[in-house]
Image (cartoon, rainbow, N blue to C red):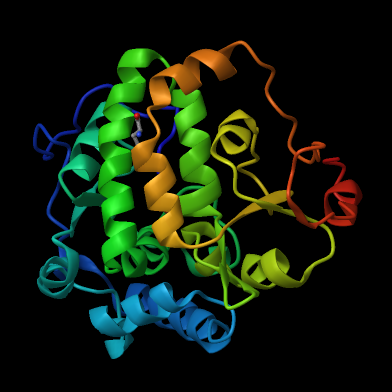
Length: 290
Ligand code: PHE
Ligand code: FE
């Protein structure tokens, strides 16, 4: 995921100049594959009626149901046929310019390690379950695939304009934690939600968080938390609309304007918001976060 913190300044030993490494699929243990299977079963059981159609269709297209950690070579045959995207393995977080360059060229970087058994419920850094189960089904959707590639190009531009903080929030509130409206009902599609059992329920059913209609400028001004369930979710009317508004808008003047405005604190509701749920924030309050 896009992140301001770089663990390393240069590719680690064994990685190419583009930071990619072989997935080394043979290296996974039975326990690793079993961890994937537990997480996979837990998530797919609750996603019908919760996840967006695009995500569920992506799962089918990619045939992720075959068991065990997917082999990227096989996965890529199906993914590339669908949208031209492929998954490449990296050791962990990579520098922003490397991340965006891969994305702009339809390569999604995925960590190749899987979490331990005592980390089934929550893990702050992205592992292969988050990266592959969470992100890749949406990359099989033609419209979302175009959005992600456009985002990669936008990322390279934001780096030059010094506006990464604002653009990263767009990623956070769409790609990672987005909701979409489908036939009048809310559905989850953000990878951070669909790969988390607790948040898959919380994001749709809990009275605590705010659910607010997506507005580009509003989202780019809004702070976010990386260490717990979100206090705000933003709802796009459709992926066509998300793609349209982000591609048609020149972000340079937007960055300039919002640079002069204040950031919006995490749980706030503004007068102009299209509020779908005005959250109680009880969850965050009980945790001392709001
Ligand atoms: N239109 C954006 C820009 O001018 C690029 C972009 C497209 C960013 C889609 C994100 C998603 O920088
Ligand atoms: Fe992610």
